[in-house]
Every structure is written in structure tokens, then in C-alpha cells.
Image 1 (spheres, rainbow, N blue to C red):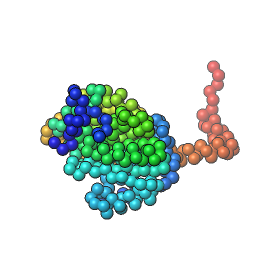
Image 2 (image 1 turned 30 degrees about the vertical axis):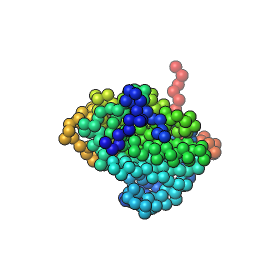
Image 3 (image 1 turned 180 degrees about the horizontal axis):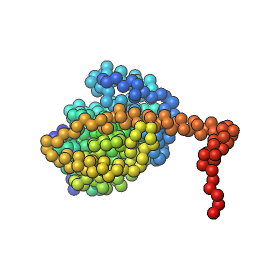
Image 4 (image 1 turned 120 degrees about the vertical axis):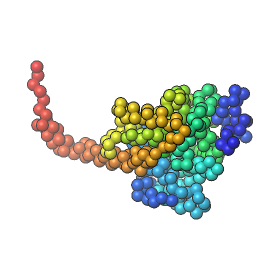
Length: 343
């Protein structure tokens, strides 16, 4: 079957080895400037709001129809390269609908995967079974099959690019694209070449479903940042009852303009997600077009928080530069909240 790794890539126990074998109008919301590329940290494990926003913009642009023909690809690359990147590489497996791209800049390389509606039912039907990787870690069969056809082209480009110049590699994707990003990150983390293995900076996913078992987190050994929004229900599938677990460090967005929380949704939202996950076991179940899963909503909330965060940072810099402003604010706070008398 198409998408199934060949037997030559399996060990004697049948486990998959990661050893390498011998459009829509998105001009405004997905726009970024060349300076955006200069402001994000590289080779750094910590979560960054700036990096998350850039990854979200690139993941959003992955939904553009760049894989139709050479003309659509040129139109796409003109936009990406005009925004600060120096080059792009297309990743497409038309037989199963997997698509993505690689954007290359002076200091970073970003691998971006698209989440396609045609494959949204991959994790809501009988293909919720696991496939074992080398070492015994198990991942979702459908996600792995979607990733496998483009992996060789991806690494051929990355190995060549990194040999020319060592750079930090980021991997990102929304929805199914997030699951594919996890597959790619897992292979990166276990690559035979230490120089390639150590070049990855982080993986950012948005509205990502569960993709592996409890041991997947330890198998990856790379900074993983899982951004979720409101009552997005896609992260509820496949259900945990089947042995699937989320991996990485969570950033949960609620109201626009509010800092993302590292805590999970409240008990009612958890209950609803659990019910949704169980419903996904029904053969007749299909994922609905839930607004909170829309990448536009993710991008809008990340943008709102970034704008507020930047404004607060600039305000603090002004206070630091001007002692009179800082003193006046301190006096105002003291007048509003006078210190309590000693007991």
C-alpha cells in the first residue's frame, strides 16, 4: 500500500528505523517582515512568543495552493522570499495529499507541514492503530504513513543546506500538519548524523492531535511546544483511552490579548474534549468545522498577545530610560495602595 515504509526500513522485529535509506488570500493576517526573522532566538530551547507567532504565520501560509503547478509555487515563493527568507523547497506527495515546504533564511530553516481537510478523518476511523518505531515507541499509523513519502526529499534538502551553513532548524504545522511535524521532529532527534541531530531548535504545533504513546515524549528529546486554543477539539483525538498521549510543553490560549497559560482547560472543557474523543471511535463520526480549530483564530490570538506584549515591553523600556516617569508611577501606586502599618 502507498505510504507504508518498505521492509528494508524495518528491523528484525518489524519496527520502523529512522535511519536514512541508501489559493486563498492570506496577504494580511499571514504577513511578516524581514525583521521578524532577526528577532527570534536560535538554538534555544525556551518557548518564545515571537517564534510562536512566526511559526503560526508560516503554518497558516501552508494552506495556500502552492502545490497545484509551477506557477502557483513561484507565486508562493515570491511572497515568502519577499518577506525575508532566501529560498524555499516544496514537499509534496500528491497520491496521499501530504504537502509542506521548507523556508530557508540566513540564521534559521523552517520546515512547515500543511493540515489538509481530506485527511482529517485519518485519526477518527479504524486507522487509530499504532506502528512501532525503533526502540518500541509507538506512533499513529496514519500520521506516519502521511509523513513517510516526503521524508527523504526533506532530509536531502536539509542535509545539503546545513552543510553549507550551520543554522537552527524549526519544525511546525497546524492540525494534521502538527502531527506530521512531530513525526519529522522524532526523526531529526534520532538522526545518525550528530551535526544534523543537534541543529534542531524546537517544534511548534497548533491544534495538534495526539500522535504517539506515553514513551513518544522521551523518544523525541527535542523542545516541543504545543499551542492549543479555546475548546479546539482536535487535540482530543485520538482518545487517550486507546493509549495516545500528548507530548511537549503546552501553551493554552483563552481570551484574545491574554498571555497563554501552561495549564490545561477547566474541568468542563476537559470533560467535553474527553466525550469528543470517545465519539471519534464511532465509524460514522466526522470532525466538524469547529471555529476554535481554525488557524486564523490561532494566528489572531497569537498576534493580539504579541502586540500587547510588545507594547508592555516598550513601556517598561521608557520607564527605565526616564527615572521621572518611573518615580511618578511608583508614587501613584503608593497613593492608591499605601503600605500597611507595622504590627
